[in-house]
Length: 446
Image (tube, helix red, strand yellow):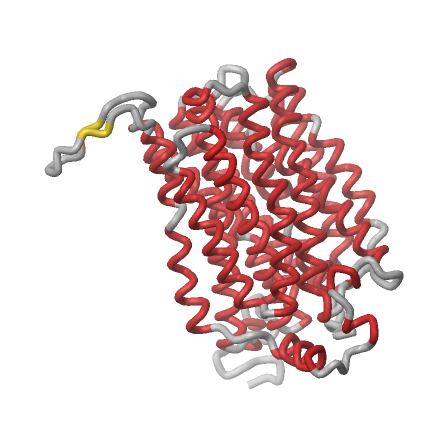
């Protein structure tokens, strides 16, 4: 047998041979973060499919419903920062479990909202958990996996977002069209009548409590990363440097890190304004007479878009491990900007099916760059805090996107509304140029 082969007969250069370098503990970390992120996306995006029903029930305009969703994005900024700090001090695994329990509980409680205020409060707390999941899950896999495969695993984890969106679309398609607002329903066999409870979107949110059960797997099978254990031990013994012993949130604003903190936060803000300006309104774009004009069963056509998103996130990691983080990130953003313009002009299902997967591929795939770059520019002592802060403050800033695009859609139509996000994607691509190339960089403690 030649030197370049292994016993299985698969070349060492096979695209799958790298998997043999990953041990069971690292795979378990991936499963925990991937499923957590998938369910995070599902719970958050259920709201996007319930927009029409919620607006009708509570008599809200497009901009008002968009603002209601923005509250979730805004609160996620605080959740990300808080859970980032928790992950640095208490551990990545604990932070991950707490965040999943939080967003699951308040997704379920949203189902019982008697008025807008109750729903608003639930969305605030759901946002705290949603922000916290990314802050802990991405750091967990970044610290557990080998540096040469860090881009791959973060891309694989991020691809769960597309699957979560697909799950939300399937649930919405199965539930919302069959339960009309204000109609009475009798439960078979039991004979109980449910009168005017707007069951469609309420049942949708009630399903959002299911991710809480994933916590049992995480707590039973996962241990903290070794690099975190070592850093935590040194912190408790007071053996970190003077700056390392200070509060982690203050450290990311110290002279050695503030440049990265500001740039990373600006990047996530621009990217997420572009993302949420587009993706929050895609379901309504498909079913509204102002857009493509399908009925609520048109939600199912979200699936091809998010198959593209899944592949885009997954491929970003593999490509960036080969070509570098910056050029791949920039390419995805610029191609997204061009495609969104064409997508905004779509008027038929055929056009949606042609453009949708590419919109998903480039318009979501760039998300895989955040975890890779941020984990490599920030040291272990503040990694959770830094990633939680930069990513989720950006998400909080993006809270302006749903009502902004909702206003433009209401006044000028979807073409103008959706095309607006292209500008933010282009500016974000410019910001990427100000960050260092970090492909293959070893994670630092100090």
